[in-house]
Length: 286
Length: 274
Image (cartoon, rainbow over all chains, first blue to last red):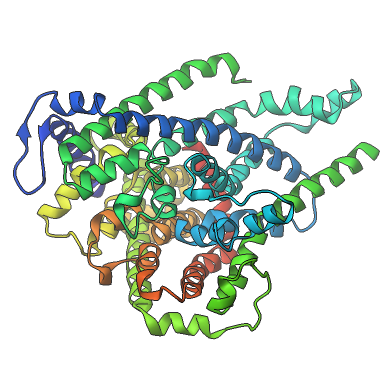
């Protein structure tokens, strides 16, 4: 009965891991068998400015996205964690972007941020500011992608926090109220430490997934029409996954692309271990 | 009492404000999908469509392979959901109830594989499907779900472990074999977990972009999310059709959400545990 998983593990996990590691040390274009090249791919990678740019873009995206989404989702969850009317309706509103594909989100954000006929520019002009090129602007592209990603994902994280908040016993708050603590103090001194376990999980999971962000950038920078334009303009939003995709699947440099994958894997592994070690300092366990 | 009231008002303010931020762009998009091309590209933009072109939605079906993309998406999603439910529950049943060598080690392996970032597995998967001559077919997109993904195994096993053993023991006395026990006891008792896994697989597969972008090359095999984008060239001068097409692709998942909201919420929470 475990056969499906055994096939899955042996072929698609263990076999794939080993194959990928082997490819990363070889020259491989899919059509011909891989040729062993030792550390060649890695040396090339570390001397390639585009790789460093992609690494920086990935870090920049993650550093903006993860804290922003976590903090805002927590605030929303706290606001929602009481007996409110129309709770279902509010939850539906926040899940609408969560259940949408990035293709849908692309058209939704285009309605606002289209450089020609979007509402954001029409608003800027109305209040006397210059219109922007938004996703086609090298400096704006990552911050704007981050804002859109936070907007899309916040409902999901909010629900995870809500579950965490429901486990905080209400007598702790009552005791604090008797001691005269205000709302803000209670949030900072009770809520934040008591749900730090949830916060930790959210941080780990969102760091891991943000580091591998692909779909949003691929779709919103026009990768589906032309793979080479993904990560634009001028590689300003080129993250590691887009770089890997272009090298591997556009140029069939599978060995080199596998090396990118392994570098990404190692960075993620180190980041996760560091987060695990740091958790002892700030995560509160009862 | 007074404090509670201010808290409620503050809560409502935050939530209503943020709900508006969530919904207004969608409403604007719905309006865009009903405009004529002239109004869609008008500068400065107008919010309300005038005249309202309902037939934009009909044109989508006429002018392109939208129907084909929908069929492809339905095939991939349905086969994935069935495969995930079948394979995960089977493997989870084995982990929860059967005795076999290395069971605990293997379960640790399941947990461990959840930690491996998919990025290192993509290229070998591509090579495997190429050697199986499955590239540019829909098969790679759903077949992987028939091989029990770890998250589903984990979710199901938790649910199965919560079923008291007395149930199956009395069933065994009545002469039920393991398959009957699975079908008559485990399945009905764990309906919510099945629903949660179904809903999550549905959402992931319906919206998936990375795998179709890698495995599919011919346009007629595309699923909706990349298919719609590929129609751009065909519809230049009528981009409002693309907006209508994108919104239509949202309808099935929206319906699933409306009917199964609580399973979405449960799934999000188990994702937190994951």
